[in-house]
Structures are given as structure tokens and as C-alpha cells.
Amino acid sequence: MAFFRRRRRIDLGTYRAPEPRPLAPVEDMVDEGVMIVTATVRMAVKNLIIVQALRDRLDFDADAMLREVTSELRRLADEKREDGDRIEQAGTLAEGRIGKARHQWDYHASDLEALGRRQEVSRLLAGRLDELSNDKAYGRDLVEQARERAFEEFAGSVEQRLAGIPRAADDPAYRKGRAERMRQLVNVDLAELERAQIPEY
Image (cartoon, rainbow, N blue to C red):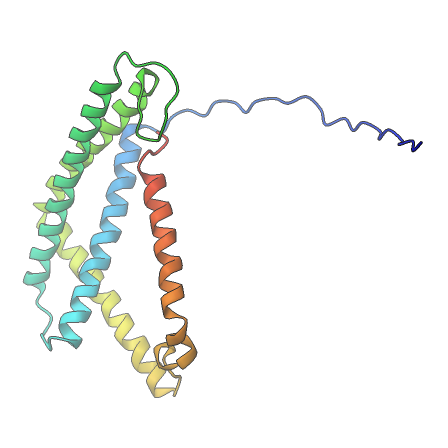
């Protein structure tokens, strides 16, 4: 009959739950949202400048780019207003409901506080984006930042060509693995989108 030695117990100490962290102020969350939108719009305008220069052979038009900035900010403001309405509807359905959620959009009464914060952030952010869409100085500054980044990309590409550095897209191995890389990037984007549906406010 085999005998097994009992292992000596290791004292891991007593578990102590972490102290609850205070929720971020709503205004800070709105400021963060504005920063994210600014970066998104700047990148979109930079890409548009590049496409128009390379594909369409168009000269840079600051006024046209300003209209693009204004249009995109208003579109995103409308999107955040729609988010606020959707969250309000979810809160109405959650009132009085108890029990455990069956899926991530199955809200209950215990979710009302978080939903209320999300709704407030969405509506305040929509208002801030409306204000920025009418701020010509802000818009022109954003256009200039986008123009500078587009120029940096042009300059970097020219330097690579002059230095004889082949583009990654010209490498057969790069082209061969493109489909797999795209699939992986899409999976990452989908995972991020799923997490973004219910931020922990």
C-alpha cells in the first residue's frame, strides 16, 4: 500500500479585499471623451489629406478640411446623443428588475446608478462636441495638426525611398501574410468593441 507524505501547508496570509476606488468625476470622463474624439477626428482628416493628395491629385484646402472637422464633430455629437437615449431606455427597462444578468445587456435595478452615469457622460459629451463643432479656432488648429502629421508621413515615405529601404508592402512575405494579419486585427477590434459596450463607470 502506497503512503503519501502530506505536504506542508503554506501560509498565504489572510485575503483582504482591495479598498473600493472612488468613481472618476463625470467631468473628467467627458474631458477624456473629448481627447479621444480629437485624436479620432485628427487621424480621419490626416488620412483624407493624404488620399486627396495621392489619389485625387488635389491641393490642400484648409477650408474644406475645416468643413470635414465640423461635420465629423457634429456626427459624433449626434452619435453620443443616441447613446444617451439608448441608455435611458435600458434604465427604464431595468427599473424594478432583480436577479442575475443573463447577458451583458441584461440590465437590472442594481445597474441603474452606472447607467445613469453613462447617460450623463454621453449627453454632456454630445454638448461639448456641439460647442467644438462651432469653434472655428479649435477646428483650424485640428486641421493644422492633421496637415503636419500628413506631411510627416509623406516625408518619412520619401526618406525611405531615397535611402533605398523597400516598402513592407513590396515584400512577397508581407503580402502573403496580409489576410491573416487583417483577421487578427479585426478580432482585436471586435474584442475592444465588446468591452466598450459596458464601461465600468
